[in-house]
Image 1 (cartoon, rainbow, N blue to C red):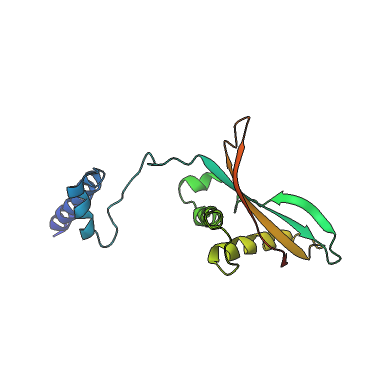
Image 2 (image 1 turned 90 degrees about the vertical axis):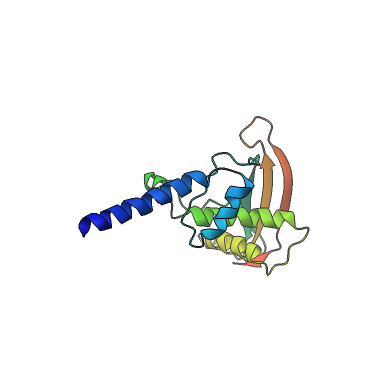
Length: 168
């Protein structure tokens, strides 16, 4: 009985490994087979992106006190959490970083995004949380910048978006 179960399990894992290897082939016939993977068990690895990222998004904010005096100049909003060794195995903050990056990308793609979009509200919430550390902060404004070649000697600003002022 145990041998039969072991044989079935080995067969299932062998099929899974073969399907995983075959699914990496970028051909139309192989792509059609992916429709049978309704549970998403067959991974798709992309070792090289078709369009590499050539720019960075930075979210900065500044705050004013109740009298309207600027509390501090533009401060960079930190990414959610610091890198840890455990992130190599289980990166729990990856989705938060991706959400912040995607929200910044979305806001720059629109000419004048509405204040009620989830992307705007996500960044406003992150900025407000960070601004609350300063007790004098009463209103806050955030800015999203897209910079190409950030680590080079000549970084180039591609686009920027500045929000309206909001209560902290």
